[in-house]
Length: 375
Image 1 (spheres, one colour):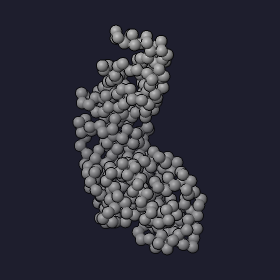
Image 2: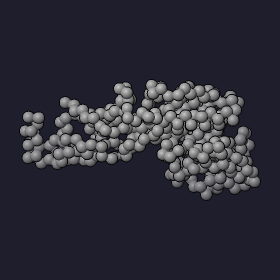
Image 3: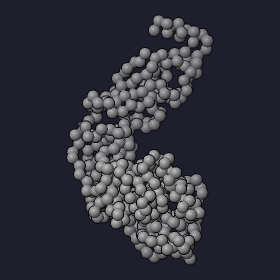
């Protein structure tokens, strides 16, 4: 038998039907774009988000992700000197200007990748970690698969054009979110406005770092075939958004359109943090257990991206099966919470046990068995 109880709460959802909420029309001058709320994972705006695109130097987000992982697992260190091979030294495209006869550290190379978009720095780091760029690329593709980047394949660390080197706006947003989530200690590097190496000062090409104080990353990209690209993240109060703009006509256009996309998100939506991981939401009657009530909640933080002024229209209902019989282990699925907005179903979240409750003694179980006969 199922029991339904109304809950006086609002909870987060991924994949909220934005179009149904009559948001303002949005037109972005780019081949594809994608706007997502970092906390809730809700897509706020998109166009051609799953179409294959050439990532250009946005590739370096994955290059850096692998380097950050190597640092976190102590396979390399920031102060470690890295030998510069002739291949790295002669690398074409944007450069940090490293040289075989000049010492360079992992820390300097990372800054060269992030700020200067140095192709030479990418090769040097790949060789330091994996022995060759080819071996490093295998790790890049493994990580892309693990992160759910289903339409992504890398053939190099730099983003130089290759027919088999592709991704999507959606997959790039997943990668940007992973950097922010998994490596908060390194993410501030993406807000650096310039980096000096070998006597050469190069500015960060992300103009929004100067134009919008809320913007704190991430990366630009360009090739003749890819057009001008920009992945940006900005945080206003407790709301963080990630925007991806692919294939704009100029560096100026990619900045303007990224700013418009972010402004749209901040002006049209609120991000609400309603429940913390393992916070008690309700108690559920428990039979044949050492306790009569079971504490239940969610296994992760619950966020919701709501269109402005829509919070009071969100309804939530809890469902669980009865009788719920001990023993129950912490983390067991004991029910679900369903959410609707204006009568439309928008999400379902599992309700989990927040504690372990063992079975009662033989007398307690027998007594509950008798009561269940009349329940």
